[in-house]
Image (cartoon, rainbow, N blue to C red; front, side):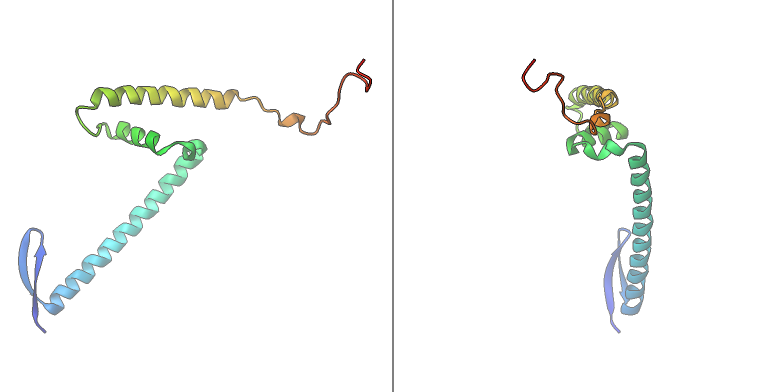
Length: 125
């Protein structure tokens, strides 16, 4: 066979076709394995998150973006630092209020089996 130029780790190398092909296939297999491991880890972490916080799927993408910025410790730009801090505080307060609201929600399901009735008799007395 012939040879091919390849860019690897910042260098150009001229390799025989068989060597280049084998190297690329090996790299592809390593990449596939790494992707499979990462997907499995992400799936496990997502399931753990949903077990701990089932309402997490109710959050909007903007809220998730703010949470991710908070966990990474870096706003998208230095200019927005104060804005991001205020948004993060507002988000935390909002999430806390929503959590309290969910816990304080009245459960009327116990009244589902009760038939509609009036304390007055049919003639309005």
